[in-house]
Length: 92
Image (tube, rainbow, N blue to C red):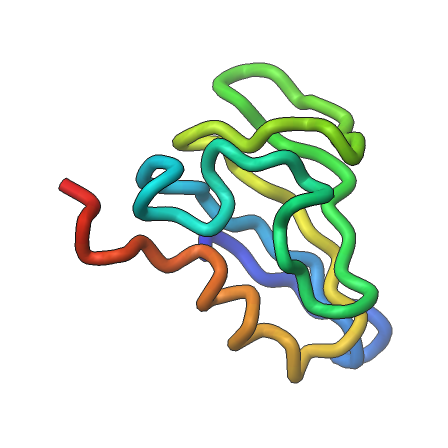
C-alpha cells in the first residue's frame, strides 16, 4: 500500500496500492477488474501506469507495477485490501 487517505471523517478510505508479482503470485496482476475479489462496495476508478492515468472499466487488466486507486467505503475492509495486494511466496 502506497498511500491511504481518510474520507468522511475516517469512515471511508481512498487507497493507492502497487500491483506486484505476476498472475501466478498475485491476486490482481493479469486480471480484469471484474475478476478481482474486492470487498463489498470497493471500487477501482483508475490506474496509474507509468506516466498515464487510465480510467478503469470492468475489463481493464491490471499489470505489474500499476498503481491501483481504490475507494473503500468501510475502513474495516483495509486488511482485505492489504491481503489482495500481498505477493505469494513464488514471487522472485
